[in-house]
Every structure is written in structure tokens, then in C-alpha cells.
Amino acid sequence: MAQNERYRDRVDLSEEGRAAAEEPAAAVRTGLETLRASGDLSVHAVEQVFAAAGLTGVQTLGDERAVAFGAAAPEGGCIFGEVSADTLTVEIGGVIMDGGCLPAVGH
Image (cartoon, rainbow, N blue to C red; front, side, top):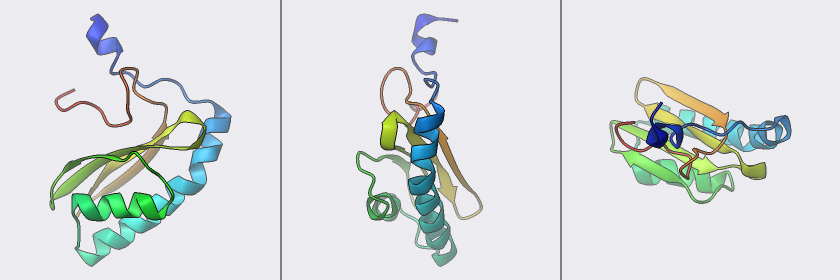
């Protein structure tokens, strides 16, 4: 594996970190599901869902068709995924080794 690929991997998250992220992840999941159902999908609307869940430093990429997201969670983890009119994924994991919670475009 090339060295630059290694830095795109996620760091393992401790059980404590995962447990600390469960509640805000559930709030994000509920908020995004409501957003999806309303048809009001946008980067700004996704960022508002994270703010309502008490999470800051949200990274987003997308438009009104689909938004990829990542945000720092309590205890050093990340809440990340994607939302579109058809799908919603919300995951909990460690940070990406080269920084942040949202993978670089094209990687």
C-alpha cells in the first residue's frame, strides 16, 4: 500500500468512543430521515441537522441530490455517511488518518 493511501484509512475507535457517539448519531439519523421525507435536501439543511444534534465542525460535500457528511463526535470519533432522496447511511468510526471525518474526493 502506498503511504498516501494509508493516511486515508480510519483510525480504530474505542468502545467508549463508539458508545459516546451513539446518542448524537441517533439524533442525526432521525433529523436526516425527516429531511429526506420532506424533500428539502441541501448541504445547508444537513449542516442544520448536525447543529441541532450539538455537533460542530461538519464537513459536507454535495448538492440537493445527495450530501456526503462527516462530523467530529464525542470522545474523538466521527459520525459520517450520505443522504439522498433514496438512501440514508449514518456510521460511527474513527477519524481519517490525514484529518477529518469526510474522505477526500475520489478516494
